[in-house]
Length: 219
Image 1 (tube, rainbow, N blue to C red):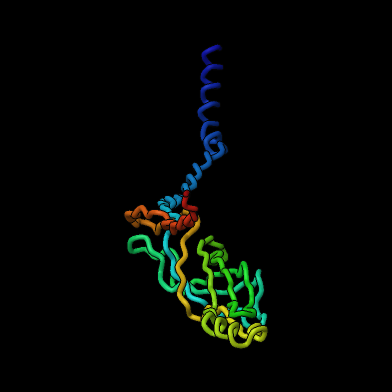
Image 2 (tube, helix red, strand yellow):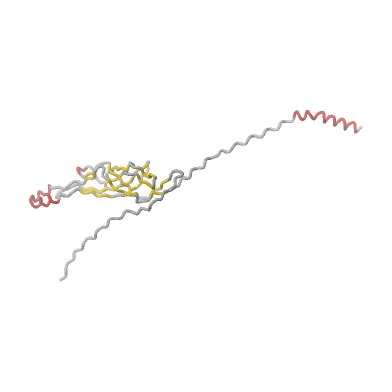
């Protein structure tokens, strides 16, 4: 009897196996991995500096004169860079870059051959909205009327006050020398070797002569 039941159970399992195979859910396919986005390596940009006290040559965009009271201390004026400022073969500040200066002191011509005088200071270059400080100070004096004044004093007496000197004048186009006031960082183009930067000494100061001291001989 037990043998009969075991045989019947085996037949039932075998007969139902295809049904299980047909109804079993299919395994989902594995999703393909999302590729990693490669990022280009950033270019390495090296940096050097344009030394302080680098010489720059600029020229006046306008005439400055003490004549007629047209300018006073505080007057701003424009200049233009005359030559490329370079490090090796690289142009750091191109020719034509605008520059600016200021009249710091001025006096007009006066009586007794007194000539007009003025002092100006060069302030900065302006490159792509950035101000690059420069230094340069100049004093301009008109040519005095010394000989005429001496003659006028002797001949005309008090009327010598009407003999006047000449106005100070800096003409348009006058070339002036300036120097960069501080080191200027410069980023080099990609794959450009850093040029050799010469060490530039600061401009020498003009020596001031020591005034002679008058002495009284002893007896």
